[in-house]
Every structure is written in structure tokens, then in C-alpha cells.
Length: 365
Image (cartoon, rainbow, N blue to C red; front, side, top):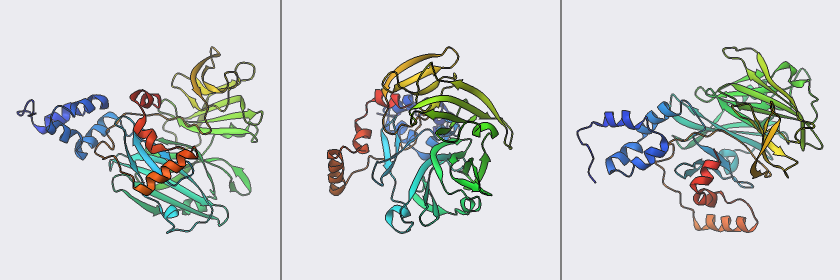
């Protein structure tokens, strides 16, 4: 099919198309070859990303296969994904012994590049390794971990958040002058520099034992939560949430929520706070189904999803990232391993990504 209007320049088409939502652009690819080539071009995807997602890293989902070293980045809108190559700790080029690692990723708007950050630490050998993967360059690189060593940060939690170009992790077991402290560990994706931010002073007023902490983006503000757990961590008795005040570099937090959950809803560890102020968690009364709780009206809504062993909630924004990628092909050995994993009832993410329907994709938003 020829171009519907060859008199319109490529620049004008770019200005028109970059303002369209991602789902509409997916349909526009079928109009003609020239529109398809334009939409999947790196320059157009960069222009659309800057216009539509505004420095948002939530346009991709990051997966790590349970029990395996495979790491994937997935665009659920177009069902495109890439397998990340093995990092140095997995390939064996760097020996750190028995270790634990955490993953997160962010977006560098200056370079139009997504970065996966992997922090691997081993208490046995007192060694920490920080690796950064560039989606644009398709390579891992190791960066200095001196900041963690200098500030006695020997463990970061799985609770993290990308906000304003910076990845925020909660730190655990960080000791300064033999006093247990809790910090937010910060990584600037564009500058590849580290910093730290002290948590609210009254966050420790709840008993340290049995607390569940979280960090997330709430209405374009950085927020942290602390839920006091009881009954072996299954029931949340009290939940407090703070937001960071704007344009303030110091330790200035404002508590926006302090709700007692006893007697109204036996909700497990709070997973998320919606923009309208409702709590998202798993309720004991409904056999640990996902529940939305309004602390003002104290009403709850069963959302019909059952709790799994490991559940993480995140924001998601449609984007064109990875649209130009071809679906990767597995070798015979890899396919056999995936079949064996399925027989052992392990998660086969490759089949999951291929088989999910559009409704399933929307459910993950």
C-alpha cells in the first residue's frame, strides 16, 4: 500500500503521531510500510517517549525467573521482551560467593535509555557488587560500591521505587556508631551516583519487631509506609504513611495517614496506596483475597485476586519501548530446561509472556 498522503513531510507525520496513545500507534503501523518504519524508528520512539510518558520508567516490566538466573524486560502492550545477558556474578567472571541480589530499573531521559540496576551482596565475604545494564547498549558494566561501604550499608531490601530519575531502596541492617538506622538508598540513573535520605523520625515509634516498610510513588510524591504486623506477620494492626515535602532536601516528611485496622479489616501487609487514598492489601476474612480498603468510610471491596507467594504492585504506562525487537528464539537445550522446569511446577515466564491475552495485560497495570 502506498503512502496515503506523500505530500506530508516526515517531520509533520512525527509531530502528529507522537501525540497519539500507544494502542492507536499499534494500529497505525498497519496502514503502510512508511508508517510502520517511522513508528519503530529509534528517533520516533524517543520523541514519543519524551512527549507521552514524561520520564517514566514504568513503561516496561522487569522479571526474574524463580530459581534461575534469567532476567527479562517485557512490554505487555506489544508482548515484546528481551532476555538480558548474564551479569558477571552469574557468568562466574566475578566471584562473590553465596550472595543475595536485588533488582530495579529506571529511565535516563537525557540518553533515552532504560537501565537495570543489580546489587549483589554477601555477608559471608563482606563484599558488595553493583552492576548496571543498558537496554540501549545491551551490555552490563560494574560501578563502584564505595558509597555503600563508606556508609555501612550492607543490605538493601526488595522494597524500591523509581521516582524523579532516582531509584529509591529501603536499607536494612545499616549501623552508624552502633545505632541501627533505616535509610533510603538513592541511585541517580542518569548520573550513576549514589546518595541517601533519612526516613521520618517517628517511623521508629512503632515497634521495630514485626514492622513492614514500603516505598512508592503516591500522586507524584515520594512516600514511605510502615505497617505494624502481628499474628506472625499475617495481620496488619496499624498503618502509617508519610510523603516527602516538595522542594526540600532535608529530612522533612509529612504524615498523611495513620489508620488502625484492628476491628474493621484484618488486612495483611499493605501493598499499595491509591491516588484516592485507599489501601490495597490481602484480607484474612476473604481467604486472603486482594482487597481495597477506604480508611475514611472503612469500607472494603474484594477485587477477586488471591494472594500468591510473592506479589508486587507497580504503576504501568504504555510505551513503544522494545517495539522494534524480534521475539527471541530458544535453543533446544533451553527449551528442554523450560519443559523440565514446568514439570517441577516452576514458573515458565517465556510461555507466560507469549500466552497472556490483552485482558491479562491490562490486569497488570
